[in-house]
Image (cartoon, rainbow, N blue to C red; front, side, top):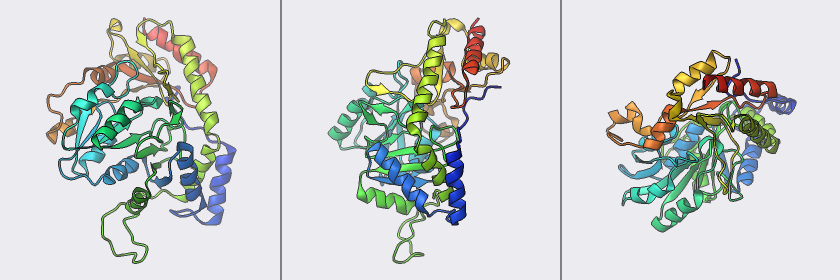
Amino acid sequence: MIPVCEPSISKREEELVIDCLRTGWISSAGKYIDLFEESWAAYCGMGHGIAVSSGTAALQISVRLLDLKPGDEVIMPSFTIISCAQAVTECGGVPVLVDSDPVNWQMDVSQIRQKISPKTRAIMVVHIYGHPADMSPIMDLAEEFGLKVIEDAAEAHGAEYKGRKCGGMGDISVFSFYANKLITTGEGGMVLTRSDELGEKARDLRNLCFQKSRRFYHEDLGYNFRMTNIQAALGVAQFERIDQIVERKRSIAKAYWDRLKDATGIVLPVEEPWGRSVYWVYGIVLETVTRMNNEQFSQRLFVQGVDTRPFFLGMHEQPVFHKMGLFVNEKYPVAERLARQGLYLPTGLTIKENEIDQVCNAVRRGLM
């Protein structure tokens, strides 16, 4: 079975992790945490990096930094992972959804203005599947209405928008370093910001809001969201070859494009002229002519030894949010089509040319 995604670990990763073990600094302090935070923040053009235990933890902290009041709203795409909306509801806020662009699958920026209300506090941008969202109109709206911008760049390590790194344009940005991401620490995440105040607050929140002068005296409630020095050592070593990893992902995407560009019945991912995708995953969308949904097509590939994953199910179709009285009777047709017709193919860094051939041959046979 060809897996969807698997990490690539080199001797350098082993070397730094072993060094970390030998120093004895294996928990939530040590030189590798500092180095990873500084390197990642500088790479994205941000002033502060706060390493945390997961991308979900990074989202929770980023929303806490907004100081939401009950009922405050955060605009986001429906087509995303549940962590985005959950981070807002857990802070007492209300996620307000927009549909996806039918071409690039990012949030439809043309719908944002009509969703802004007196209760809107922020726009959460999600760079979906390694391609940047259209940031310029989003940033313009944020400035016009005095809103904060959170960039969820969990899937977009190294992706660029008009020459700027994803995760380097909003007020706050978040990353995930889960095992299937371009840069991995096994589990882990990062919050980035330019603001000294927000950076200090994020560090407090990840560490139970201990105070420097009086450790067990708490004026706020935080989390145990610390990253370990061992994880950071792995991240530092991975970061050293990020350019190589990005180019590898782009070469895998080109290989798929070359082999599938003339296939009938599927739509391949686009790369907008203003963006540089890192193709975290290589998604395809079934056209109606195939008379199949992604589950049926995935099964056809599975029996041929190819593993796949379906696209996200939109937030407006999640039963858990309906129980909370959210998104009832809301419709987002592009997100719904992507959820039913989209799936992504194997793009692990270690995938071989003959395996890409096998995948593409299976796709063609599956479409028959």
